Image (cartoon, rainbow, N blue to C red):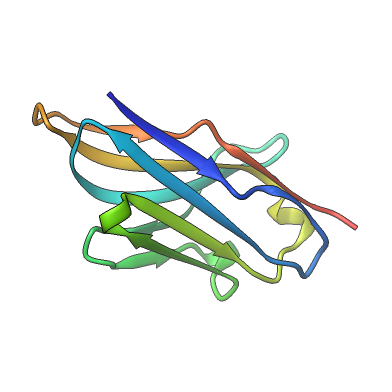
Amino acid sequence: QVQLVESGGGLVQPGGSLRLSCAASGSIRSINTMAWYRQGPGKQRELVASITSTGNADIRDPVKGRFTISRDNAKNTAYLQMNSLKPEDTAVYYCNARVTTRDSYTMDYWGQGTLVTVSS
């Protein structure tokens, strides 16, 4: 079994910054892509950013230039640095990881989500 635990969400004023973390643990052989998704009020879940095991990152247009994604492979952890936050960034942020387990099964796993609220 594999668990993803997000942390770092909270309330921040417009223009502020937050750093989210996603730590994977359990029966992990390797982690391919790690990604952050978000779901705002009344909206569908959308991809925010992703990063491969070799560090190739993809940042989606709504947050390009403001958010960065990184990972520490030794810690099985991904990060999302969010700067210049806007009210429209308010959402539950979910971590996703494509994991190959020690039993050689490759599956997508999700964290429980962390709420980010951008408001004055």
